[in-house]
Length: 494
Image (cartoon, rainbow, N blue to C red; front, top):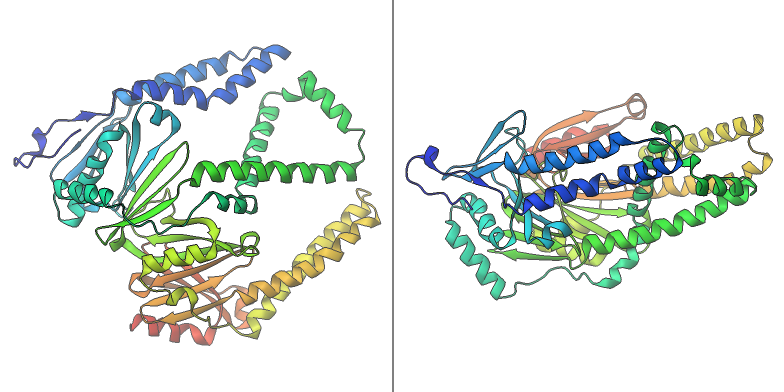
């Protein structure tokens, strides 16, 4: 591992390669990546057609993985972190060490087998480089390497950082998370299982399209489709929904356990958060709390009905890969998400404050949108009945659609509001995915006022607070226009 030596000449410092065990990991990873295509090629050979290009593409991916290790070097100088990479087009990334904002340590199952870890240093995006990746380093060297990366930011030596980390490890720092295996009960109520099914479905459709009906030429699939064609449409749709729901729940539970098992969040040196989680794939994130600009609580409707929520830290310098937010609490009891957020912010006032409502006009706008949605569905139902796709029974669906739309409008207005506290701006909106953001007013660097045609007619506006953290913009929807400038002036004056 390259250790900076301040001898006055950075150009004389040696370049270091990544761990040579990556020569095994890269080819295996590329092979796993192309495994679905290889399976398609095998199936294609059994039903006719030669998929030689699939084997060639897989072999090419393995060669690229090897060349990536050969052509990648790095070094840490007293002032910069430099990475030299590229196969055909060589590039040198050089980032000032005081720009390092966070360090993310990731270990997939393959990496763990070979005792390796991937280190990603978040640098922010103001200078055009949002992240440096070192794939991969020996796991036993990661702690010292991480301390070296963060030492420049805090004005300490790497040795002091490492001593502090070791002392905190020996003292068993407090874990602010109460994560336990019972939290898996919340997994089926997230959308991760549904998202996974959509990814698989997209792959299947892509193979079916580009391979000229390859899947439907497989005897097993042909027989299954023939049997399904004899089942009445209503019954087929009903059973399909049930099966998809069960499969989505199982997938969500598995993903939840693999991703969040052992979730822990601790504080080091009073200003650094260490977050770790994962079963087969271990992930560790180190965050500098000096970059903290707020907290976001997420309460999707499905989780909110169970009293559950998740929490994220809004920070600068995390890069585009994580959208500027870092997980503080996975989907679990809301009380735990609130407790961790309070610990991180140092106060619970922004998280529990009573919100200022936006008035009857904003409420009416939500009911108008709900009615418009129901009207569009009614027009679609009429068209389907006209073309004899469905019979008159389709209108029974509106027994549920109409009241559900009204309830959604009511809940959207109930969750809409904002509050202004000393040093904090709080905004909340949404129903299907309700979010409350507590944002430091010192972190707001600009404002945008957006008014659609219908908002202008209603005397409303959406106020957007621009920041250098998180999603870089946070909305206060449908605020009465007369309250917009007083709000901005009050925040700007604090």
